[in-house]
Image 1 (spheres, each protein chain N blue to C red):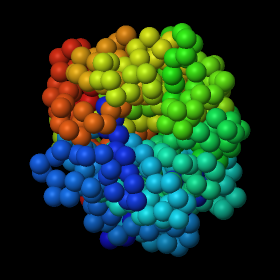
Image 2: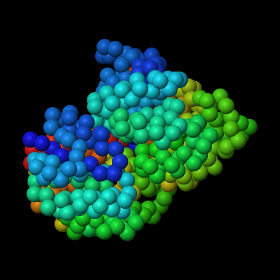
Image 3: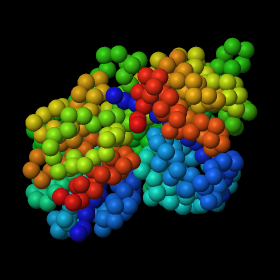
Image 4: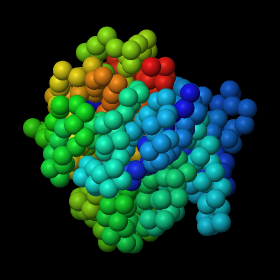
Length: 251
Length: 198
């Protein structure tokens, strides 16, 4: 049976992990490779690296990091952050990334999704969508959720799927950081309407939230950052809990 | 001991090379017929679309080379599908090593079953085969595919998604894995290590 995926997300700046990470066994808390290996060994199903480095010349540092990670871990990983062209994608895939994630570039130029999917195959193109509720309607946002667009989230999700995205990473900016649970209603609506997998992001605070996002939210995978980094929830205990709750999980 | 990874126009094979490196294998990425013929093991990876890949192989006469290989040969993902007889993906005649047809997943209920089949799924119905020797108890592999090989006499392990399909094939000196062993944690590593010791 196909299992639901648990995906830790690491923020990267200049080749280092940014957000505080609270692992006693880490010799170097800023080393993404060491952290990636720990997550991989603990049973994470995939990893996402989000590069928040602003400048283009730092891209080389990112590619070097991607290669180090690819050599070290035995699970798939996605690289996102500032990717806008087919050349960017080629560069990172050649460095060893399994998938790339695009966000603003897709909003600004939707045709780039078709181009990337044609060139590299849908399986490695993840489209990240940041969404926020404005007076009861869900709108796509860019710039880390600060800038509203005129795109309605449900329609945009359908469009990116039609254009050849392999997966959608849906982050609810209303839920992100609240630790009050995922945006299950919106996730279920989108996941049910699409034939491609949906990764839920934003709002994870308890193990029950993961169970809820897989049942009520109909998500195929769930992503979280700080609750894993600060060991509020350990991946082995989360997987045991989900397995005991009759959720299909890789053991 | 040398392992040749066949270079052709199909997706990113870097992760296969890294996995072989982790196992200490002396691996090269090559489309040179002599290097492929003289290797101790040959790996045929791949992601992408079947007809484009077949045309490329034919254009460089790699199709006949693959049919003539005598040493242990391993197809991975699209590599498995291309070793079969025919693929529904753009109605493509494939290499015909395995007398098996490749079909598209058609979900009865698209809300429950999405296509592609993406994520970790379990190996089942394992045959007694050297490739499957001493696998860990947890037998989940990472899959990404929209087409599958039907169950056949050459099937040595299956996986269930919508219905049972072929996870691993074996016939003579040819093996093939639908999942990505290079991205499938300890189980995937064991499969690759078993292949390298054939």
